Amino acid sequence: MQQSNHRSILEITIISAQDLKKSTSTPVFSRHIRPFITLSNDINTKTYKTRVDDKGGINPTWGDKFRLPFDQFLVNKRYPGIYLRLYTKNLLMGRTQLGWCLIPAADIVSPFSPMGLVHFLSYRLRARDGSRGNGVVNVAVKLEGSSDGFVCPLRDLNSDVSYMQEMRESCESVIGFPVK
Image 1 (cartoon, one colour):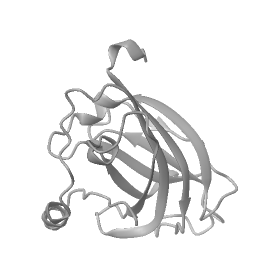
Image 2 (image 1 turned 90 degrees about the vertical axis):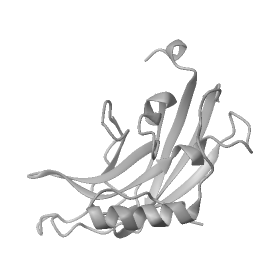
Image 3 (image 1 turned 90 degrees about the horizontal axis):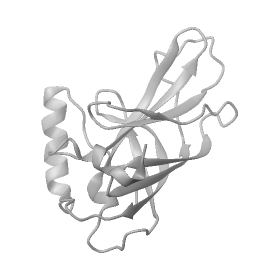
Image 4 (image 1 turned 30 degrees about the horizontal axis):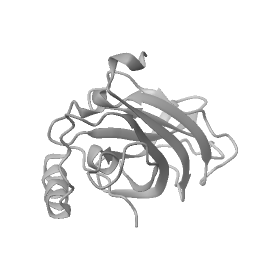
């Protein structure tokens, strides 16, 4: 990845997660959760992955930092952002998804905060079907470079709620909300 090809670089640190629960599809003989996180856009052109936390259990910590070209996460024009998926690593079955959330671009690019400012964000994880899941993930994001040309509307919570209802009815993804 060359920074010169991208106007803005997103530095994202996956800090931790809290209160995770095993998926019902996790094997019974698996003693503990071995969580890791992937980051991608909605079409999965490139996936970034944290290390597996073998010791954290239901409250893992990572501190893994990634530098990503931010413009690749603006592909989805309706809901641009970063899809964060949390998995547990199983020895026999590979990986099992425990939850996911969307970090909206509007939470990262704000007309009210200067470029280079670190934002600490927390999101409730969603179950695979978009319903409320178990756990919260904590991240730190910082946008470096230029935000010229990024059009990220301010978040309207009413539209997010109606979008969640629309997605539940069509069995598609929903947006995660920052936990306050």
